[in-house]
Image (tube, rainbow, N blue to C red; front, side, top):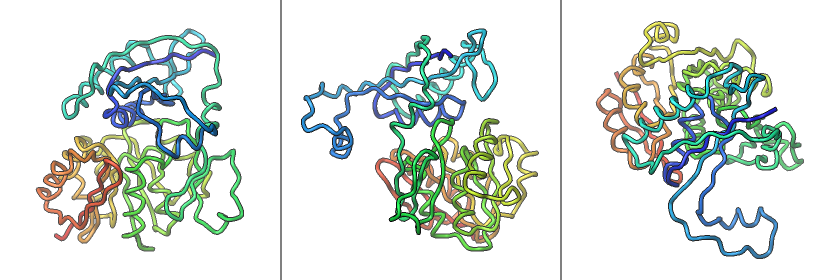
Length: 329
């Protein structure tokens, strides 16, 4: 098995945004190379007493994504072969869209082939169980410790093109969902990805959930994570399509139906999404947004208020922001 490596030269401030955007087109397994100094926790996890001084941070970062090749040497994305130039074109398009609202530096792309390496299983040495408040997130190859057996447990593996809950934006959403959830909640998760937010809402007692995503790969990821967490098939309905531009998807999702709509998407998507999604919300429904870099907070707040929603609270984690609002009319 060979792998094609797509390597992007960017800046450290754009790492999270680019990784998130490229995951949406099916690129997975981001490898980050930069000169940001290690945190105290990262140093502890390296199990060494003294680390040599590293080079001074120059703000440059390299992001690499590895895509398996088929027998004809074509990269395979979401189970289907794709021409290399088509992937490069998609990456270029995503980078240009990101460049409109934040600096990304050079943004150059190089493509190389790697030797036969078990990249997916190599994830296991880097991804370990962790907590989000009193929730334990654990991969399939690790065991639940005695001290965690009474906790709520989410079973999820990395290696798909979607999130695992480690990112600040996901954690912000989880806390807000738990705050506003009731046993009668009908929840809509726009840009559901792995389905983690909807699945957790169901685990915490929501009545029913619907997820939408542009990426057809999301359906498989959602199905796998539902099965891993014992979610009944009729509890979570998955739809593929663009709810902003596709009326058929909006009709299928339904109008004035949802108690909670959650959207963990970049700010530039939240702006056109918000005036559309208000029609899916019940009167009194809650709109939970995240994926907002702090420099875009005011832009999203303005879009939410212009859509006639009342902002209830704004929460922060790291450089990321979550805005929660309510539909009063």
